[in-house]
Length: 274
Image 1 (spheres, rainbow, N blue to C red):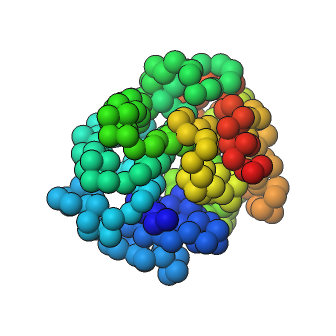
Image 2 (spheres, rainbow, N blue to C red):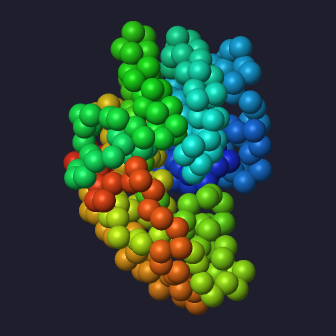
Image 3 (cartoon, rainbow, N blue to C red):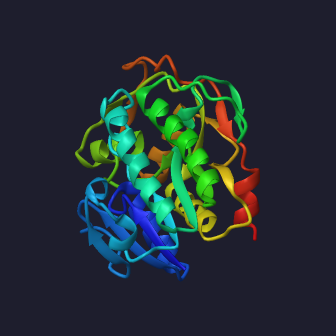
């Protein structure tokens, strides 16, 4: 089985590539540049939006794991809407050319404001351009895969915890601030509760979900356990031995963030426990 991973040089992509290689998969990794991608993969630098025949260009993969996306941490970026038709065109070319399965990275921000457990059938009313674009791609991709007979896994991500400099999450920014010698870090009230997944576990979830066909459709890549943002960040500081404190209330909470939201881990636990 040959797997093509797009966005392979990104924060999530690097970990997913490594995890899949460790699990014995044959991986083709692509991004604008692939300098930081595990060298065991076949690395191909490319702009996937410009390829006339991406299926042939990437040596006819069996499965496409589409992680490519820009400005994921800038929810109001206009690039989400500008890039949307190009993402769909790329995926359409792949599905019509002959891949057997498509795995796409989704986000809890497709759902919008809600309180409680997000499931595969939870209604979506996204409140940001990022969420709107991802939700539209999910809806279009479901129709595309139904028409072409391609299996689909929509891998919905939540909050990922890791101390790598790569990435723009609060944890990456906190790591950079601590290593720069900062003693305080501007923060919100931290009272909202979210579903946090450690980086290595998240990469394992994406890899193992993509490498099996029994569980399909929308898969929540999560822990199923909500935790206050403040508590998780304080634990992160303690776990890494950082000498930095949170300046609570510096930033307001985002109006579209839920007070308490988490994912349904039924499907992902079934996959991991096989």
